[in-house]
Amino acid sequence: MRKKELASVASHRRPKQPSRARVTVLTATAAAAVALSSQAAQADPKPSKSEVKAKVDKLHHEAEAATEQYNLADEQRGKLQKEVDALQDKVARGQQELNELRDGLGSVATAQYRSGGMDPSLQLLLSSDPDSYLDKASAVDAISAKQAEALETIQAKQRALAQQRAEATTKLAGLEDVRKTLAEKKKAYQAKLAEAQKLLNTLTAEERAKMQEEEQRASREAGDRVDLGNEVPASQRGAAALAAADTQVGKPYISGAEGPNAYDCSGLTQWAYRQAGVGISRTTFTQHNDGVKIGRSQLKPGDLVFFNNLAHVGLYAGNGQVLHAPKPGAFVRYESMEWLGDFQFGVRI
Image (cartoon, rainbow, N blue to C red; front, side):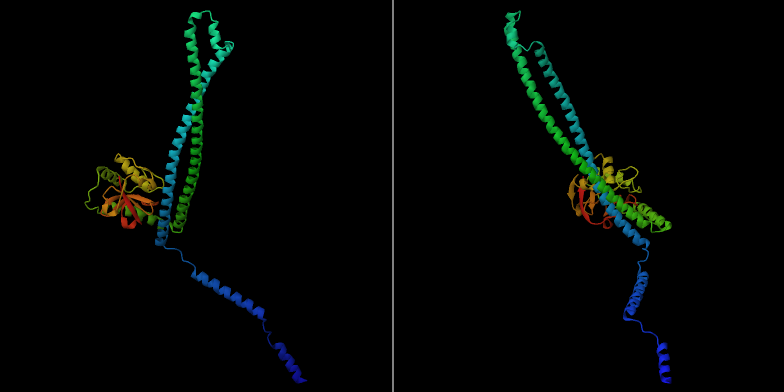
């Protein structure tokens, strides 16, 4: 009896073994906790100032490409708008001429109606001055021929007006498409700039101020220390454009700006050549057609130089240096071609 009691006490004291399901849940929970702890420990640290700068520079270059596409669409919009305005003016003037022709023909018809609608030849036969019959008959023939000519003119004018209206309608549709493209490109470059600003906002105010100061110093020092060698410009206009651009060193890059207080890349080159008395188009995507394409070994001071699939342009300054408006947040400055990306070709204006 004593043995049974001891055995019963022992069985009550023995801890209950956890079930297999309970062990599985506990194991999974512990594993998850370890994983979360590991992820927290391995979370990406805050990017350094240099890492932020590199990412921001990349976004700014992408924004610049979108800006040039926007500028191109805007240039197309301006051209189309002028064509539409000219067509609409031509249609309005044509309609006025058509109305005058119709009024003239209507006046003749009204006069004939008021005369009783009698055949003109019969009226002449019954006139009080039969001696002048031949002269008057000749006049009637002339009037009839003039009416027929007027009718033909009216018909031709109607056909021309219909064609002009159709052309204006097509141009207006094209203009609307370009306006939509403009909105898309503007949204694209604004998104890139906003993303870049978001990255910049991860830095402290002191770090951002230091980056801005470094950009300004780089622009000043580039102008002071750059060695342009002694290369001779290919033309007087190229030399004049380069000299004009040099006076803008230190001015800020702003998307879409054409001077004189700020520039984007193609805005600077267009402004510089305008000061030299030469008109070139507005964007990188059109400026490359404004002159003769040349290779790198042929470059002379004042030539346009294009980079990164026509997303960027500057003025070759000599000794491998380019004078350009670099990117948002930067300033007009001299910079080595090696730092500007993939060289496409030069263009001599």
